[in-house]
Amino acid sequence: MNLFSFKRKETSIENALRHLFSDSFIEEITSNNDPENYIDRAIAEGANCELRDLLRAVAELMDLDYCYNLKIPANTLIKRVGYSSKELEDLCVIPQQTPFSYQLVVANPEIIDVNAYRDIGINISLSARSIIRQAWAQYRAIERAHANLPNEQEAIKALAKLSLYAHNLGAKEVIIGVPNQHYYEFSVKEKVYRGKLEIKIIKKLEGMINSTPSRWNIKNKKLSSISIGKLNYNGPSCYFLSWKDSKSLLTKEIEKPKSIIEKTSIRANKTKETIINKNPITVNKNIWLVDDDPQFSSLAAKIVESHSYSCTVFSNGEHICSSLANNTQLPGAIICDLHMPGVDGAEIITRIREYAPLVPILILTSDEDPQTETKLVNCGVDAFIKKSESPSILMAWVKNRLAKDSAKDRYTLKTAAA
Image 1 (cartoon, rainbow, N blue to C red):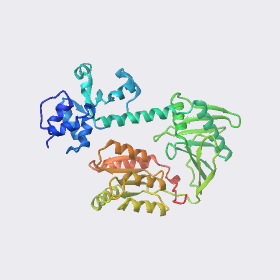
Image 2 (cartoon, rainbow, N blue to C red):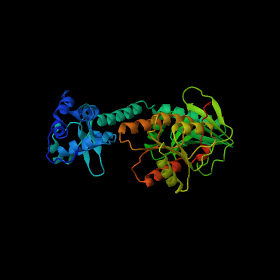
Image 3 (cartoon, rainbow, N blue to C red):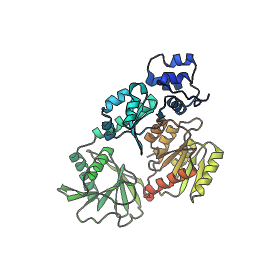
Image 4 (cartoon, rainbow, N blue to C red):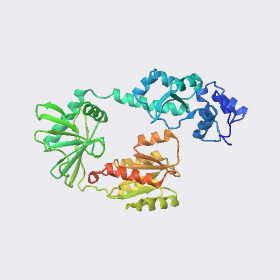
C-alpha cells in the first residue's frame, strides 16, 4: 500500500483514513467516535504499516506537518499557549519549540482553528494520542520530582552532615558529581570514599548554585564555615564542599587508592560503611559488544577497533552478565543490541546494571517506538542509537561517555555476593 500517493486535502482524520483503508476497517476503528484515538486504533487493529508512516500519510492528506518524537515542554512554552498544562493534556495538545518555529502538536486537528493559528505564526502538527500522552506523562513525572524537593534548610542540613562525616575521617573537601551526578567522593590519604546522595538533595543543590553566581557559605558549629560551589571545567556538572583552610579542588590528582569505601547514602539516619574492594577495579579501553548477529558484530567490532579501542564480542546477554560476574576488570563501555532471541532488552540492561552500575551502556536498535526508548533510559541506558545511523555517531557517543566518566580508576564492580 502506497501511503503517499494521494494529493487531496482532507479536514478530518476519519476522511483521511478512508483514503488508506477499506470501509469495513474504518467502521471498526471509528466505532467509539473518538477521533484523537483513530490513528492508534488503526495500528492496534492491524494496519499494515508503521505508526510513523501512518502519521505522515494522514498529516499529508490534511495539509499538516507530523511529529513522531516529542520533547517535554518547558513551563514558559506552556504559558505562551494561554492554557494550563492540565487543560492542554485533557485536549491532547502539546506545545513544541523548534530552532525556527513554535508549534502545537495535536491528536485531533478538528478541535482548533488551524488557519487562525497559522495566521499568527504558530504551526499545527499531527501526532498520535499515545505519543502525546507519553510526553505529558514524562512532564508530570518531572513535576512530581520537583514538588518533592527538600527545602533549602533540609538540603543544607544534609550537606553539612556529609561535610562533617568527611572532615571527621580526615578529608579536606568533598566532590559531588563523581563519577556521575548521583555520587559524592572524597579522599583521605590512599583511600577514596564514595557514597550516594539522594537525587532530590542534588537537584536542590543545583538550584541553590544556579540562583547565585558566588559560593554558598554554611555556618556550622563544628566546622565554622562550609563553602559550596561549582567546579569550573569542561565536563559534567560537579560541585564541591570545603571547609577551614581547604585548598582549591582539582589542583592535584587523587592517588591510586588501595581501597574503596562506599557509604550507602546520606539521609537522616546513620549508615554504615562497607569495604567493597581491597584491590581497586580499573577500567581500560576495552569495549564490550553484545549482539546475536555475527555479521553485524564483526562489522561493529572492526569499527570500534579502528578508533584505537579493543573490542570483546558476546553473542547474548547471558554471556556478558556471566563475564561481569566473574571478571575483575570492567569494560570502558558496553554496546548492546536491544532485540535478541529469548530475552528482553530491558531485562538484560537491568542485570548488567547489577554488576556494573556506572559503566556506560549504549543501545543499538532499529526500534522507532519512543516508549521503548523511555523504558530503557529508565533502566539506566546512557545512549540510544539507531543501527541505520552512521558509525561515526556510534563512536562519537562512545568517546563522549568515556570522556564524561574520566575518573576510571574509581569504578566499583559489584559481585553477585555483594
